[in-house]
Length: 453
Image 1: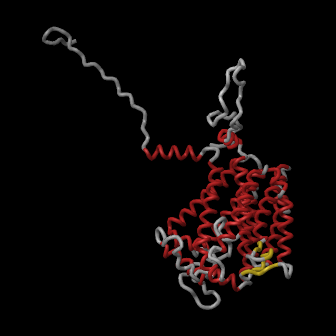
Image 2: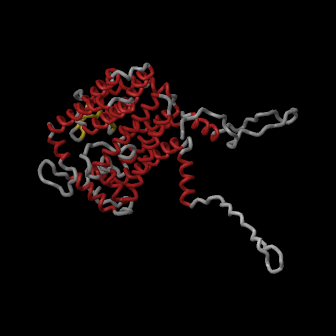
Image 3: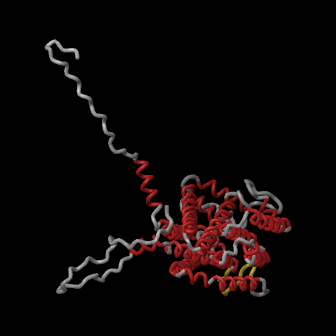
C-alpha cells in the first residue's frame, strides 16, 4: 500500500450510502382522480345517482315546462301556469309512486307483472273502441277521463312489458330453458308484437320503436344468440319499412332529417328546422330563462316533444349538456345495478328500464338535433305529459329499490340510518358498564360481497 509523506497510510474516503427514495407524491390531478374513483366505487353510488339524477331532471323539467308552455296556454285562452300546474300534480303523484316502488320488495314487483300486462292490453283495446278512444295530433291512442284529463295506455305498456318480460325470462332461466330458441322467443316476442299491433292501430310509431328497443334489450340480456337476434331484427326492420312506406306522413318526417330550411309540399320540415333555429340561437349560456323567441308560435309542441330545443335556446349549450350529463349518469347507474346483481329478475328489469329511458331520450334528442326523424315521443321525466311521467317515475322507483337491495348497499344504509333513543346496556344502578349509543360511527356487520371491483 503506498504511503504518504508522513509515513501514514492514506485516509480512504468514506463511501456514501445511496439515497433512499422518499415516498412518491402524486400530483393533485392523480389524487383527485383516485378520490373520485373511490367515491365512484362506493356501494351507494348507483343509489344516489338514480335518486339525485331523476329528481334533478324532473325539477328542471318542471321549470322548462313552465317557461315553454306559457305562450301556448295564453293562445288557448288559459292561465299561463295551466300546463305547469298539471305537470306539477303529475310529478307529485309520480313522486308517491316512486316512493312506493322503491320500498316494495322484489317479490311484489314480480307479482304485479301479469296484472299490469293484462291491464295495459285491456286499456289499449279500449282506445280503439269508438266513443272511448280519443285522437290527438292524428294518433288515436288516448282515453279521455273527463275534463282536461286523459291517459295514454301505451305509456303504461312500456312498464308492463319490462316487468312481465323480466319475470318471464327469469323464470325460464331458473328452469334452465333459455338454451332452446323456442323458449327464448315464445311467448315474449308474440306478446310484444301484440302490444306493437295495438299501438300501431292508433298510428303511434314512436312508442312502437321504444317497445321494440325494450324487446331487443331483454333478448340481449338473456343471451340470445346472434342468429336469433338477427332474425328478430330483420322481422322488425321489415315491419317498420312497410309502416313507413305506406304512410306519407312518416315518409315526410324521414325526409326532414338534416333539414336546415323549411320546404314546400307535404314535407315542410317546419318543426325540425325551427328546433335547429332554437338551439343555434342559444349560444353558450342561452338567452335567459323565459326569453325564448321560438316558443312564440314558431316552434310547435314547444313544451312536449321539442322542450329540449327551448332548453337550448334559454339555457344554451351549458344547459343542454347538463341535461345530457344527468341522463348519462342515470343510464350508467342503471347498467351498474343490472351488472352487479345476482337476481335474474333484477338484472332483466333494471336492464329493461334503462333501455327504455335511454332509447326514448336518444330518439327525442336526436329528432330535435335533426339526426333522427321526428317520432313524437317526449323526453323522459322532462317533457310535459302526465301519462308519460307516471310510469317513468314508477320505473325509477324500481331502479332505486334494486340499488338498495344490494348487500353492500343495505349495510351502508343501515349505518346511515341508526335507531336513536335505545341504549344497548343497563342504566345507572346496574352492575354492567353502560355501552355507547347506536350512532353513525358504529360499524355495520360484515355483509356478503356485492361483486364490486
